[in-house]
Length: 403
Image (cartoon, rainbow, N blue to C red):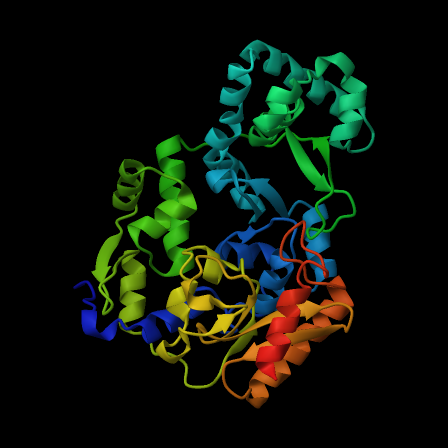
């Protein structure tokens, strides 16, 4: 069979926006799927104590918070440190090799401890003491409880340690244990959008992949989730070196494709075939997503999602399309950002600014997401330290722009 050949001229920003939208399952193709299926198809959901994992699953499959929390409790999905050491919500089939990808980041803090006079053997002993303590406990324990229980085994590193972000030896031990799958972090109230955790013992079977194979698997998943990305974009997400990235791309047989804008995208061979036959949808497909949604975050290319006429739009004197990461959440139609939103819990409603007069489909979707936030979440936090007070100026700015 002759491989598909894509014309550079046809790979316009408009087509590629719709293609990424489709690959992310935001076109309704994931409706009714499980949380694990959605994360496998669309990509791991970034979790920084915010509500993005919930909206990721609601937008694509209509999954409500109660089901997501049950899936977390049942270990069908879980929040783990993986690529670049960042925490994402993963499906259970990805737990072991996902932790393997993040192992180097877990080891990195020990370099700081070594400069403070901490030997590796001290941390190894502390790891064993933490694990023993958790196995003996009938309930998960938070860091303060562990510190109190372990006493002098947890060493304070003084003012110098605080300056370097290592007040005691406990966080490094916890990070290493978690990276090994020997303990796991549990949200205290069962919710992913609240940054209060405890730890419990775990016995996750180790990954059967070597490091090269694990990197190749992540690159394969990443290209499948995005529908294609530049080398630089893939490196940002994975944290791999150029040599590691190129080896992984070769291992999955990725093809380099030139676009009308001059970018070179790496794509899986099957996606080259699919894109050659892809036709963008004609009807509106409206979604409200988090600023850290996989559609935006995996490639950090939100600027590509604005139409030319909207690239100069500003919020609080900042040109939105020029930001590496969105400060507000996007309203999108088939991959194009057509507006921005924040949730105002005081008024129990969404403050939205659409760049053009909202259509009936836009108004309907805003109302649906607004009702879902009220009923399921109570608020929509971007990250752990987000609060209604901290985002009030942005809420006011969006309401002013929308009026």
